[in-house]
Length: 271
Image (cartoon, rainbow, N blue to C red; front, side):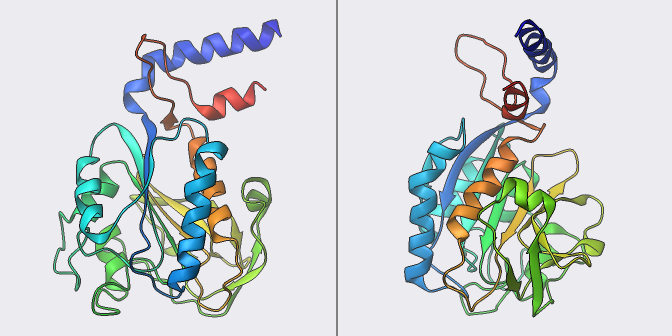
């Protein structure tokens, strides 16, 4: 016990010196007004799971809210560079107030500034950033334009098995067939693969998270396929957010009385 207390004191001292470079885990907005490769009914079921269970499962999370297309752009813009890693969850349809359909916003869209401002976008079902108003108006260039690397998700029929990391952090994940996985060899500077919770053993992974260098900015995908409505998307999303909350660049908020922040991962390590 004495050793644990001493270790915690050291952690707190280190955090006091470095907390300014960390982001607190912030608010979560769930968007399902538009969907792709998932029914509206199923998307609403999955978003309800996140809405009802996330705050109980993940310590120190902020507000969890539903947002419409009209609301989500202003919501995200207000949270650019706010010192918190805020999270946007979508279901295969990318809101127009975040990114004008058709990739005309090569730079400085709210979506890009949101990510590069240290925030997180998690997507289920259809190819991330591909489908929007007008159908596939963004296409594969939506992803390329927003994250500024030449990555695609053409990998139909990829048999996915939970990885060791997935078994530890996303226990709800089951074997499935991903139609639009990330490809690890395409994730290059300034991005890197942070977590592959399921993969095919050859670098194709889903669900998974890529991370922006020297930032809390992240893009994650969760079960990108159109055929299996019974996949536990909501629970896996919660588990992915819990994983993010434990990473070294995510801290608890500094309390009003001036106590130093400490990462949830550091606290769990002492349990």
